[in-house]
Length: 292
Image (cartoon, rainbow, N blue to C red; front, side, top):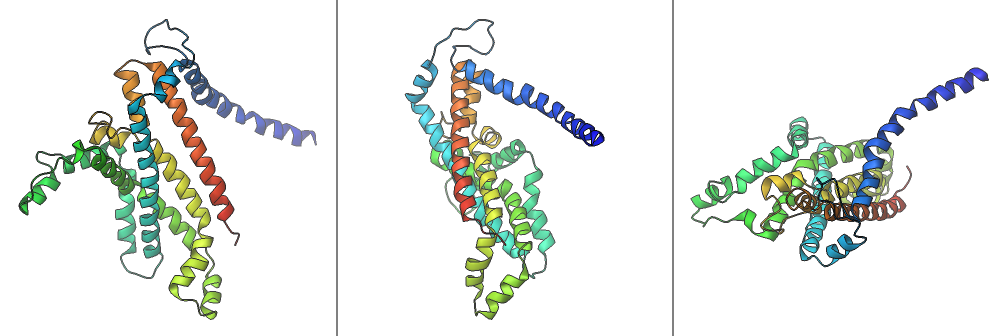
């Protein structure tokens, strides 16, 4: 008994390094961020003043903040929608008896391992106005060049599609694992009942795939809402704040405007927004899951 208690005590001690690291690199900066949001600290000075809720009040009346919130929601929900539709389509293809599945899986998953910043620069060179591959291609058809990245709505949706392209491979892998875990008995029972391919998908595949859908949607929403690298590479949030996300606006507030208090207030708001959306999605999707 004593030996068992000693072993449990040793196991508990193994949690200590993780707790210390969490406290140092997650919890302490989080608390500091809340404190800084109530000051006028510029991010460099040794002195600062307590300003209460001034930064939050400024944020509510800042038109640029509302533009970035709208863009952030488009990045989050747009990427989630396209990544799941395309990821599921590829997974269904790979789960069928068709040749060339290994090649398709490699091609679709390959962008995941590329740095988001590099991916952004690759697509920037495709869509840039002077000498961009897209404008060169449409120029051959006699179509006038388009400044894709200087128009806010166009740039926002292009960035959303680039983020989709990069991470739909992750969604595909998760869906493929989910599809391959569904017992074949369910499909055989459905076939005996006379169910067609669409009915099998609707009444067997989709309900039993809900755990994979939950994981994918949560990962994609969180990733899209905090999107940063691709935006910096393709437009740097411009023109103005037309394609900016909350993450890129925080970066500009801190380093360009040297307003760390405002950046911290915006960061805290982004944290609450992502937490609220993720929890609502989690509770809703968990209720839709069925047990095999």
